[in-house]
Image 1 (cartoon, rainbow, N blue to C red):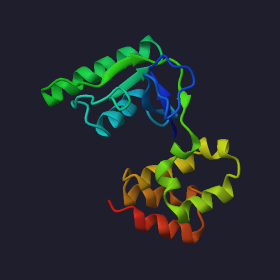
Image 2 (image 1 turned 90 degrees about the vertical axis):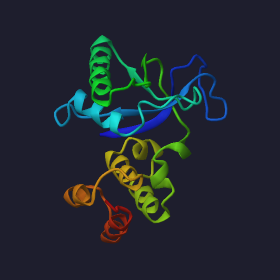
Image 3 (image 1 turned 90 degrees about the horizontal axis):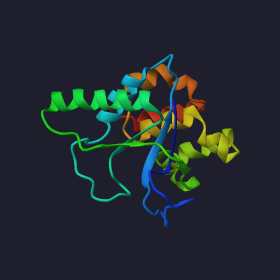
Length: 177
């Protein structure tokens, strides 16, 4: 899985953080369907935010953007199951995906960029910003630093993340679950 942050859902061409127009800050997720189904990805998405909360602005609204009718149907069915389970309406908007604009580099892998000892290791591995942006390992470490993932999950994959022995020890300190 890999992630990128950016802007979508609006009409302004080439938005930026300081000139967002009517876009919404978004996360684009690429995943391997051989390892996770679309429904499993939806379950993860629903669990990572409050789907029943009201949007306090277009910039930060809760939304799922679909690419095609098949995804739309799956999202709507998943939303209905969640509403049944919760016993209240899900307010997450379900919208067609338009152009996804990458956010500025300093927004990408934000938690990792904010952790000086670990970002130094990734910058040594990925001298090119685009390679860093598309790195699955960087996405995984960023997720751990953001509080997603458990010590047990980290134990299983830590040797695949490209970190030095020192980097592995430091990452383990950050993961508290």
